[in-house]
Length: 114
Length: 114
Image 1: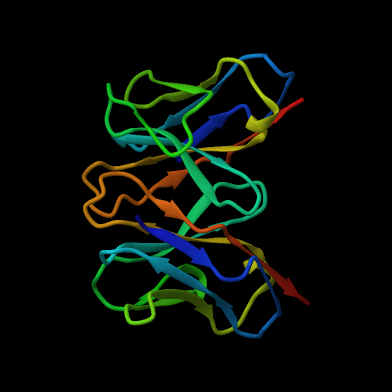
Image 2 (image 1 turned 90 degrees about the horizontal axis):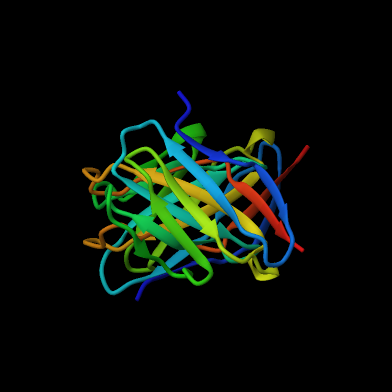
């Protein structure tokens, strides 16, 4: 069975400072990994995906994530936070070969302070 | 480009009432999903439909039924609503040919059961 753990339920940063949202996965096999963002009262939007190509993945709005197999981690980073980054972020895994099912982390609420 | 459209956006029910949540996608996707989102628990899969004419249970199917009406539409029915079904419900769709199963989400239905 696979699981996804987001290590922080809330992260608060000042505008212009770096963002780090942490995610660890547990799986017997190398999964595909994703980060989704959910702005208030909106649906989830794909930020980026890891699918076994490059381990450093770049996404939209300046976000990137690095897949580290030895640490079973897929942390999301951004060099400089913007007020519009305030949202909830979900780390998501899909087991290779699994037809349709995704496993979601519990989410990290990012607050950006002026 | 509408993407995934959910109706209604908000609903309040009394215990024991029934209702149907509607979902439609205009991306010609084969696969559709219903999730519920509860605080601190991420998204959990209720039912999914890998392709038109098929439906399967997800992680939390009890108390729900689904209908894949056609390729575009996938509805979720609560036959006798319970307070435990108070949640935010998301519909998603994906392309069966997409090996990574990237899912596209609607804006959600916020349901309160009193």
